[in-house]
Image (cartoon, rainbow, N blue to C red; front, side, top):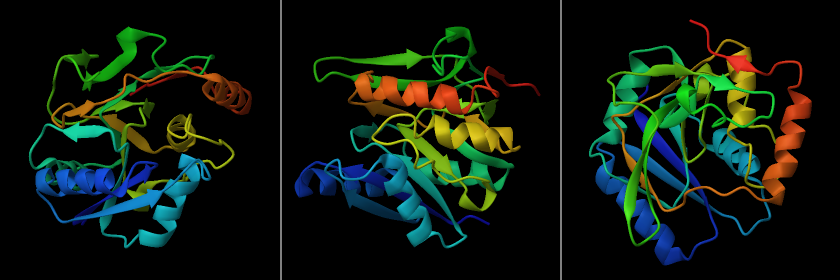
Length: 227
């Protein structure tokens, strides 16, 4: 039985900003929680930070949530909901956005009709919802989830994050894909809602990691979820 949520984030922000995010997590989660901040000024990849958390803080009774710290939680008691989903299913990884398809280019949003999830975004002036599908109850299966919020049952995965991928891109796909290939169940929920202060940007590092990912999994992609 999973009893606690451990929220892990990597941050280059100030101590005051980090503390504000920690307090927001604690005030909205509605379940026992530890919030673990790793100050990181580009000296570590996200894969390295997240694996460090898994190695240092796994107690066999906690779900890990690997989160960006530029999100706001719109759902009260979201931790209680998350624990219930893990405890009443055999999912290994749960996210808020994902896809049932990953093509040969390694771009998970390539086919919008295969995307699932609902995530709000804000640019500071306006807020809008990226609704990849209608809302639903329960968990729907996918082959991968987006990295802004990744919940992991560490007792039920075959692979940790892949530290071959440097920087801040493709840590999510390089976690999900090998676990999916080895039979782990990955899903998306829509009854936990967040607002993300970023719309997501691709850059040179993203492109390098994409090429690295495509080369590593060239014999496995495209991936299509099949029930």
